[in-house]
Amino acid sequence: MKMLQKVLNLLIKFPIGKLISYIVFISWLLITVIPLIWMMYSSFKSNEELNMNIYSLPHDLFANYNDEFYVIEPQLSVVPDYDYENDLRPRLIIESNTIDVGRHSLVFFLLKEKLPPEVANLQPDDLVYVNQLPFSMRFEINWKTMLFNYRKSIALGGLVFKFFNSIIYAGVSTFFIVLFGLMIGYALSKMRFKKMSVVIMGIIGAGYLISINSVIIPLFLMLSSFHLTDTHIGIILVYTAFGIPLAVMLSSQYISGLPDSLIESAYMDGATPFQTFFKIIMPICAPVILTISIVSSLGIWNEFLLVLIVGSTEFTKSLPVGVYSFSSLTSTQLGWQIAALVVGTAPAMVIYFSFNKYLTKGVVAGSVKE
Image 1 (cartoon, rainbow, N blue to C red):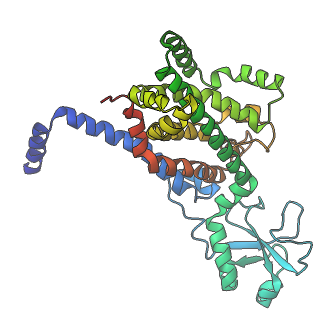
Image 2: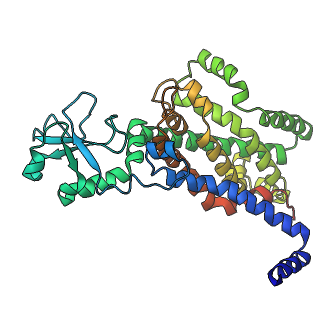
Image 3: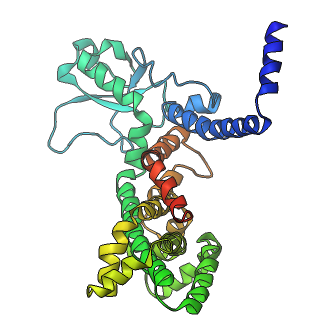
């Protein structure tokens, strides 16, 4: 009863508005963080574990010191992980009997000269346990098994090349979005054609309401007519065009709060409009530049549909498309797909949490005028 009385007294003293704010904030935090935590630990679970209980903690890939393997014969579907043309030393090929059984996914090629005689002389279909192997081989099998999902997702999904494609799309497109967005924002805010500025700003505002997904078919037909499908340039042009409206709205709001005396002083000193823009306006706009860069780059990094439709070959595919490649109508490798999701999500999370303070400053800076 005393504990209940204390709780009631606390609720009476606590402002209801503040209580609601805390409830909303904690709810949002849980909705955001719990899926990320689940994704992180699930990337270390085998496909069998995920199919049996999707919420359980990882076990099979970590508890592998006594895992059972069986010897297999060389097969076309089993690709060696060494230079088999120059390295002709005999090897014992073993496949896991507990993880992805029969798929030839977790396979090791052990040098017979480093194995005990009783293991080196095993025949196909014979069983061998990890604890029967030398320490160096046990160690290699242990860590490769723990990182099984990541190794397979990166190798089979071609995530390294797609990762660099995503960096190219996000980096180059963001550069042009910031440059052109600030130029237009500067012109609309400080140059003397107010009526035209209102019309142009209205058109840009309408463009902000249009998403890539809503006009994907016209975009594809237009890019096809200019032979820009399946090219980095075509994809970058689309990302730049759709990123400029937000950049213009943020930059024009920020620049309009700057004193006109800065620009007038530059003109009196003989500076051209371009010199004024690059030497005065851009350095002052650092907060909003950072905000535009983060918002634009994260949006491009996570974009999926445009590259899926326009990029028809592996040469132009981005990381989100690589993650999607692990799903099919016949089967889904959940472990590999979740590991690929972590690879794709981790850079965006690092950037966002590192620059979150500056992102907030840049968004609100233009709305507060001194």
